Length: 514
Image (tube, rainbow, N blue to C red; front, side, top):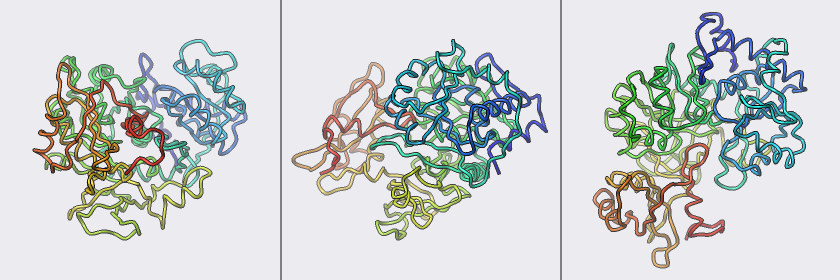
């Protein structure tokens, strides 16, 4: 199979239905088919050869969707760029992947001189914004209009589909190589559960399209021939308006986004009854936030997806019926396309209920890290992807993620998993959001430290947080220090950057444990 297959099917079945909605623009399946064929022809005419990497740096757009189809149509490889990176990080990824062609929009056009100066091998830039085309760049719309359509290369199977660079939370980012088969197996496995979009769905893209979480929704919708509603970037009121105006049925939001949407003061002004499925993941969600979300979207089923870029990205799913059973702390059970185990340091499976490392095997496991054979060998052993996440499995096969193994806090000889502490703190009525990290302590080795954003107009002390937490979990897990902030550092994938929170206390030392 191949990623453009769903578009061909849709054109044969309902060519005049709307595929893409972005602002005032709507595009039918037939129109997208024609534009993608022309854009692919333009890429080949610009010298893009089989397997070349083609990068995209921009906000969500209907043209972003056309890029995702035109690049494989031209027998090339997509390389979506993290929009929150600095120029230096972007330059590193372009150089590492030897990318010579870059799509860029209005928001990032001012960065172009720095990118070209730092990476002279960037030969071709295609501007896909609505403003003036920057000097030295080509106009997206002019290329599409001036180029004849070409036949789809139908690049697929085990051929490389894309390079997806990890967020760079530790050191330089790694390029995750995913094949068409990786992405399609992950999508089909998730669709088989019935939790993801269905034929006739209208999927809202609010999470960044460069990230695998949103790409999973994109791929599923393309395969099913559904419509895409695209907003440039996440903004709570924009999400509410898009759902209400376009009757969106499905979306993917990371927990931070869900919280901002359901707590928005204007939420009651919008009709949200069309929403049927809300997929969330990328980081744990507190039970307090999830409870508010389920009340805000009473007609929607909530599904948690646990996975990672290297798994294209789905490993486990916690479906709506699991939420109704009260299994809110679980990350779900293995999706139909994978096996999941919990193992010890030697790779041996541990008894149910015992914390170990979560490992995953299936046809969705990445091809490897781009030009990093040693890192690939360390991560994928005997076909099992070692996630680096600590967790356990219960007797019914539900996986519970307790923390990143490297984020485990050892205080006074006791292991403390920050996710458990964060869940407890988040139920305090004064807390809007929080993160828990280990910081150095002369007495305890490490102490549990909470970083908290308060609800508007609320205040809280460390003693209040400690007393509240100790009523829910063991006393030694309660935070011993507290920091009140107005925002938390968030990665482009919506994850809290705990390394940034630790820097204040550990400095730049690579070793951040005692």
